[in-house]
Length: 522
Image (cartoon, rainbow, N blue to C red; front, side):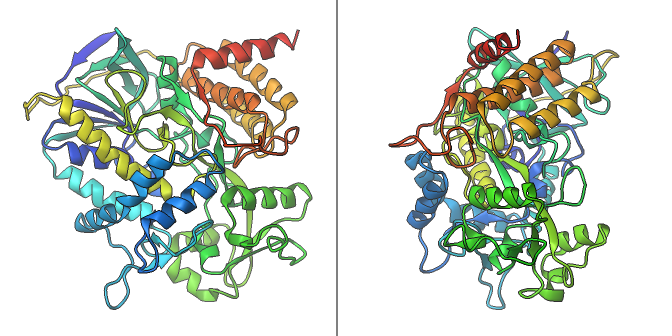
């Protein structure tokens, strides 16, 4: 394999965490690995709700941390919740300085929206449902103007190289067709900020490329993975047959939108005191039950917003329009969809993974903030906080050198892309057997299918990364014999008595569980 050595910090990913870290590392030179043109295909740009921060006069970081821990169903790390929520306001102000046009009142105060499981309105947003897109646009503009940042657009990461227990390089290839021979790019430090795993499921709100590859890549290199079984399903993905599914932002329910079924019956009031603003896992399961019963659940915005939805929530209105729905007249059909992976590469409070020389931020990480069920709009906040933490930690390991030549990259022919039929089968398996409601029989069967798919398609590193993450999710779900947060076991419907525990697992552990599952096939 051809090798290129650079003095630039290597950042895998091009979402919010990657961009923010690159800016905070300046003037240290960095090179970003971006499968798409900046701003395209990143989960951060698709985030509708906004960034959570205690900014109301009656609110406090302590309240925000309390809500975070309540939503997380007993497995949130209190120290991490305190760390992230205490600094939230600073990040809103920093993003504002960088040009993010947050919604403001006539007297210049930030417009605050309430979302599920928040005790206060504390989500700052942009044009109702365009926070992720506009924050990304502001950061991309800053990155384009920062001379220390090089972006390799159209490249994707395949493998981590670890020597002597230290991450020393990343194998990359041309992302356009995933057919080029890989090139090993070596650098002084590596930051993984390449998104989560929602696209491993057939029904997802994530961009098409976000299929657990970064988590799987780190797992295959020997990194410790935490909380893999906790996958959050957004309650109100639009059920219109699109892949990925458009998202009807939680802010709509914050404005008073209600959930009804095809009979016009509002069903959340009988399930939770907070009704439509119950924690996401509660709402998602209620909607899932309506889907299974054939009751066609829908989000009704007509009374609270009417025509105003078309100006206040322009993204949702556009999704509706292209699917022939007028939300001022008709309710929006919804279904739960894989949305956010609370699990990922285990990091300490400094953003370091278990492998030396490797840092992780954003959805690919598992910091302990989200527990078993992420509090709405904490995802972008966590990415920002840990991007800066990682940048500061990496900066302390670097020499004083502030310049490095650009990475000159050419790819030769070669490489084996994932087989579309195998990816389709993997996604269907995850939705059907490792989805909203799980049981031992289904998880055993899922592990068997993943093993067979991996055996038949093991020449594709990208597909191996997907299978590694899928294996970790299914194995973690099999081992956790309880229902907690987003993890619902129909054969173990109650949580284990006592404090909740986070899970930790190496890929080798998950493969041993998978091998045992395969023995049941014979």
